[in-house]
Length: 96
Ligand SMILES: O=C(O)C[C@H]1C=CC(=O)O1
Image (tube, rainbow, N blue to C red; front, side):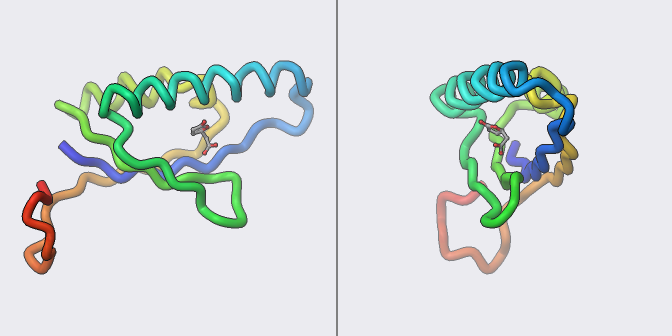
């Protein structure tokens, strides 16, 4: 199942830098693990913002909830999720 996920990061300004750096480092490691495993299919920075647009490939809504809620930055992000399906005009035969 494919989902578009948009994440806008809102780390509190008063969070100590060393704590923020640790959270961001753990987030990066987790994001790269999920990419290597195939669940986090695409990760794009929204230019000019501290936000991303991502595509997740998971087996269920529950798996997506489990993945996203375990993101170290989860408490500090505004997140939107939209389900995706094949577009009838797509020229890409391998779209799902
Ligand atoms: O920077 C972000 O977009 C938030 C989050 C997503 C991956 C990561 O390393 O941090």
